[in-house]
Length: 206
Ligand SMILES: NC(=O)c1ccc[n+]([C@@H]2O[C@H](COP(=O)([O-])OP(=O)(O)OC[C@H]3O[C@@H](n4cnc5c(N)ncnc54)[C@H](OP(=O)(O)O)[C@@H]3O)[C@@H](O)[C@H]2O)c1
Image (tube, rainbow, N blue to C red; front, side):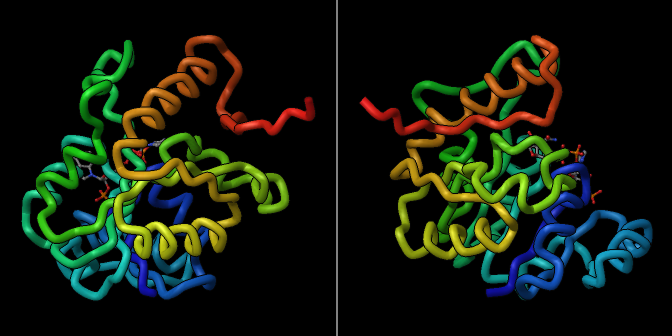
């Protein structure tokens, strides 16, 4: 499976560092020349978004939500497995811009006809990608998706990236996981706990 990571911000670079050498990988950037130094540092090719999508089986939209929607509606994601890590946060960080009756992942799916969208990584602060793999192997990446084979394929990538997998069912599970991402942000920033945190689900011995 070839993975394309679109957007070399905090999440894109972090995930690229985790996946380099673990799976076929290509990076997508708006300014390819400016991204060359990072790409070289991880030993992965970088190209523009369209070319990266074209060679990929799995496309990670490591983009602000609004720009993930732009890529989704371009038609380029047809037939691809798409990983959506976005948190559709209001510009003032006061909460989520959408939710309850839809989610970022479902809005992306609605525009990306023929793609198989899987919610994933939205509760993982980018700083965790720089932690040791040993520190994150039991940290869950919550996955929600309607296509079981697509979720399985993304689960394999999650494992290769050094995290655990927590399946939350169909894509409407993103309505639950996105508020969890917002709670994580509130803990991390609003309540001062920092970004070396992540939500987990405990089995409690009764
Ligand atoms: N940061 C976190 O800890 C974290 C954690 C979980 C989820 N998320 C979510 O993951 C997504 C990416 O977050 P991030 O922190 O990596 O964001 P970021 O650092 O701002 O990077 C986003 C990247 O998107 C690309 N991009 C494409 N169109 C853009 C535009 N018009 N304006 C700005 N950037 C544009 C840029 O990459 P190129 O220039 O290379 O194309 C940019 O570096 C967001 O939806 C966020 O909610 C973030």
